[in-house]
Image (cartoon, rainbow over all chains, first blue to last red):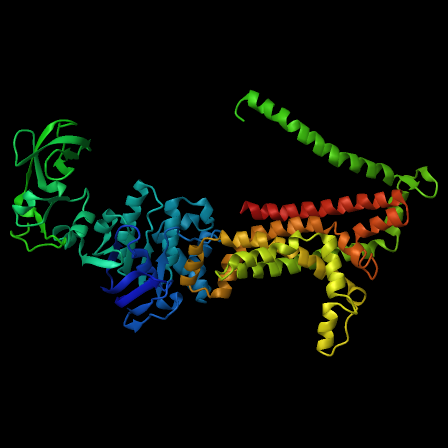
Length: 340
Length: 288
């Protein structure tokens, strides 16, 4: 149905190698998220799969067939763009019907699929409007509707939520996740937002400069990041990375401790420091702590309300069983203790 | 322009421009209207008094009137079709990334900078001359009888010359419009299974509709007044007498200012009908 295999795929723009030889398998029905900082090649990779860019070398296999040289329309994929890319002069109905019209589908079938998609996406009342008259979220849904009606073997999403405001983004995230559960179609999703990756993905592919840093389920990446890059990229707030004598105590070059794995006290603890900024969210409190002698800033999350503020002395105790150890080249070292 | 004070200051400062423009427009218009009701023959007695609508009736009933309207429409329509169609194609071509894009674009725009009189003379003498024009050599090279362009094919020649002048304008406006098209829309259409021709028809052309209406509107207004090209090439002979040229002949060749002024009033009415008609279309396009 929608198994996508990349074999030694290379993309060069002139001299610049954007994607070095890359192997990746996306299983049928999987929700795969490409995540990485901007310029890491994740969008290029998606466009290679879509066929909007030519692969310089290597093979792209979709459903067992070599699709490397196929034009985009022949690959059986549908894409949702960052700008939605709706056709502004066509009504919502015509936008959604466009791929079917291009395929020469008969009118009755077109109407049936439009009605079905519009129903599923709450667009029934807006079918005769132009995209310019819709809100951001509605445009997003039209773009998804246009993708759904083709019944593709896989959906490609290129940062589809980055133009929406924060509240809407959370809502659309859920809608896309639910859509995936309902359709059980392969989805490939590109984002720079690790929260989107963590909440939606079955499988996350972390990319840096075109290289795959790690592939795994969200919790795998959270628990056992393969290197310091993945460690600091996945998880919010970022993992604290500590070098020097404290790391040496654990026979490592660098140790990493997530903010939520450090206990806070105002009286005693293993480490001490001064609160720089305290963010009180009610459910959690985040402290940015200076003068610990470990790193410039240590970030800590405490449950609930903790009444420490700027300038207060604070004591920290890391939980020993969730300390990540990394060697000098940034790679994860074998765990000295069983991972919780 | 929020306060009462700034509003009145703005009016005061705009006043000179408004007065100047109004005077610029109103004085000639009033004089045209004034003369159109007079029998005024500068070389044959001068002002011979009021004649009512006689000039208007004479102008329309003269055998040259309807042919001149027809010629005007053929000229305007022909040039519009050629410039928009070729303009779209050229704009598509110039939008492609290619070597030497900058100089090529300047070259394409160049004809627009050539004065109408000059370009008409160049066409007349360099290309269309029956004896030593480049076209004659070309025809002879293929063993054909050279065409007397400006007499045997006078209207096509005229349309060709004027189109050559106005093509850059159309191309320039359409090119900027094409460049403003979101490339993701084209990519989306490509993913949706639309081949190049259908992408042009369903995405690019609708996107250009506004620019096309602007090109048609502006060109029509300028083309209705084409004069130099006719004066320099055929002098109004061989069926190239447009309404503008007819008015010129009535005033300067027949020395009948009253009759010419009446023709001028007709031209104003015609131009306004066309303008209102086009404004409607453009307005509709701009709403979308």
